[in-house]
Image 1 (cartoon, rainbow, N blue to C red):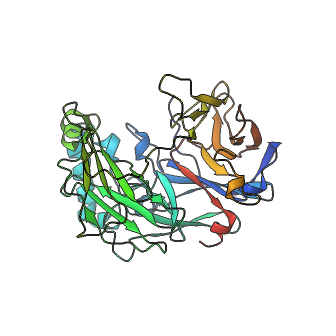
Image 2: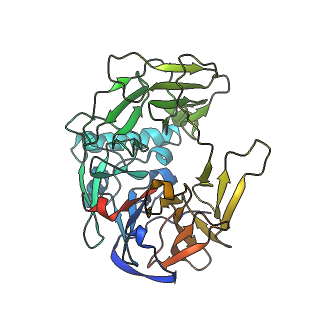
Image 3: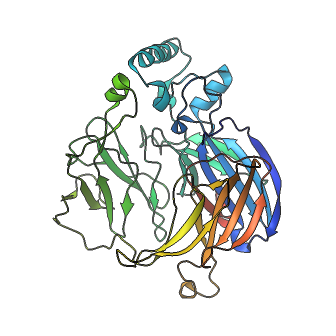
Length: 415
């Protein structure tokens, strides 16, 4: 299937609920990020190269309003003002040495004559969103976060490219982790020169603490994501490395597989600061200073199938290795595809003890390729068939994208 680029922005537009009703605990906004190139690609197009566009469904008292807006990055606004693409696409432009030389020379010329200043950002902000420190940010791991907000009528505004008082100078992961109890956020960045991995975190007010270089990582590694427990941060140093020279001279992806590399897990205290002892690496599965926090969750889990999927399944990961672990599923139907679903827990009636971990709703945009219609689905996550609770017909196609989140109404009011 070939993704169709160039979906126009959509101002806040009320949508029709064509099945069921929207639960009151969903008052707020489901926002999903994804790539949508501002200008139609004139050559090879890779999905990762599209400009970030946010698709927000604002829900209030059973009514839904859709808005689709580009993240107004420096790259996007510069190219919009000039009327054409300026920054070469990383994954699709540098596919061979001649292409690299030609596009690189043109880009350098535009920088020299003042058409573009890469110090102001080259990223797309097309991967995910994060909410911490009373800021909602659109993220892409090649640039700083872009702070956005939703207006009272459901529109999306880009506020600024945020450097946390000049304490974040280059980039950060598109997958920070937020401690729901403390409000702290944990993040990292990785690169091609030492230190290949740098860890940092933010306090509950969104203030960034000093960088912690992880010097035990000997070579550049593809570190798209990580995990945290109550007290530790874990990084998987896997067999996928980064060699952009290979992409330039041979074409293809800058990511390479190194079967001879021994995978490692780097473990550091999640609230470590520069100068403290650590990190605590695990080599080839052998424990050394192994913390006692549990990383896994031996309970029912809700899992996405893939970025572009024809349905969603619910797995009980406490089952044994050779036991059937699928406990619920829903297929979207012939020609219908969705993306990563998002789980929203029901509001407890009395206390947290009254709510089981799967008692809530799954949210997802789904597109019907046969009739060209997009819908928003709300599914009962606790039911054995993931029953549809509500279906909202959307006024235009929502392109297939990456990651999103749900922001409650009271949190939107703080932005």
